[in-house]
Image 1 (cartoon, rainbow, N blue to C red):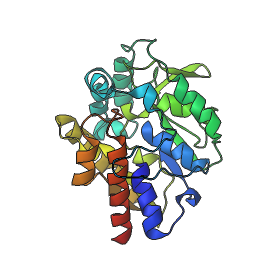
Image 2: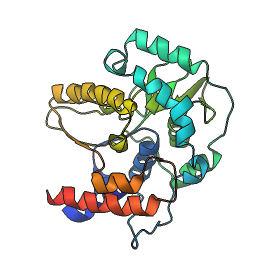
Image 3: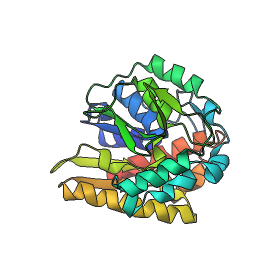
Image 4: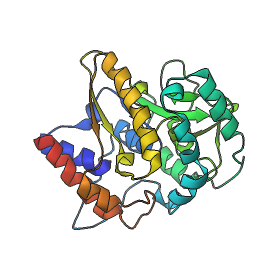
Amino acid sequence: MTGVLAGLEDGAGADLHGVESFVGTSAGAIVAAHLAAGKPLRRPRGPGAAPPGPDGDGERRGLLRTAARWGWAATSPLAPVATALSAPGGALVRSAMLSRAPDTGRTLGRLHGELERVGARFDGRLRVCCVDRRSGRRVVFGAPGAPPASVADAVTASCAIPWVFAPVRIGEREYVDGGVWSVTNLDAAPARRDTEVLCLDPTASLRSPLRQAFRVAIAVELQVLRGRGARVRHVGPDAEAAEAMGTDFMATGASGAALAAGYRQGRALAAG
């Protein structure tokens, strides 16, 4: 994601820090928080290089396969048409699933500390998607009417994959990964007529039955935004980027190659 955005910036001569709104879920929430704080996007420094930068990978290394078996991958298929738009029945099913997840697990303390150092604030532009573990409903921190939270707490909660990481307590409630609701949460964007929306969807490179469930939910969300009159560009990894990313999205070994491939794709998008 950072590679694509950096490539877009350089290819189009734009500054994405000045956009109207940032909406992020899980890893996307990390990227959104850095942009909202005015931090520069990472760019490749050489063939296959992995530039240093705040991405929280050390806390999440090698856990995607575990998560795919026990965590958000088990609950995300519950979020297509009937549940992606806050249907009460869907929230009940999701709540029942999440009640089985352990109350304890690995914490994301390093990520939380890094996010505190980034210094992002909810200034009206940043929105972070999480799921209330008790109710099964989505909560968009930073949106009007959302519970108060720090950016560090909200983003860490948005990365708390059930069955892998411990839920994050904010106030009197516990929250987990926003991907339990939707991998994109497109409909949470405060879009209106003629708004330009760019959605980065790394899961578009997945080749599994789960991808079909994701595709249905994303199609519904796209319809919601387009119904508001927004123009939406939904971007997934192209063939080269998908190959560079591989199938384990939390493995750090491929991060340099994925960054470079994303940067190349971003420049191509700008040129197109």
